Image 1 (cartoon, rainbow, N blue to C red):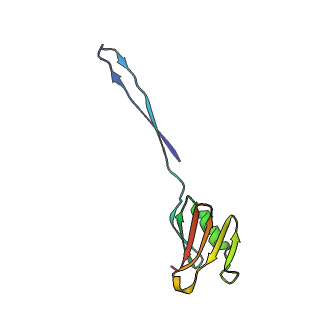
Image 2: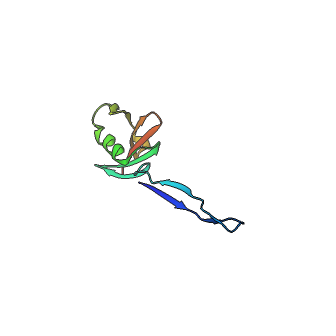
Image 3: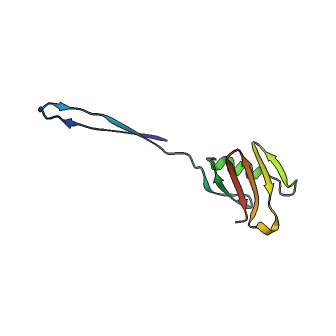
Length: 104
């Protein structure tokens, strides 16, 4: 969503009114980064990058915890954690983006 703000009117010293228009654009990004709620049995969090929560959740849903420790899910490489690092269950990385799935 983009909001455009316009303002201005300025009186000059000569008595004539001069109109000055300034604009400022404020953009509200879609839900990205941070806590994304849950997907199945996992709490989903975007810890690095600008990833839409819908993408983070679909990536987490694509990981098979009974499968190989390292799995390719869409553009992400996901890797399961060791029991010692619980509640972290697995991490998915693509470029500068990182998603984690933890036990809630």
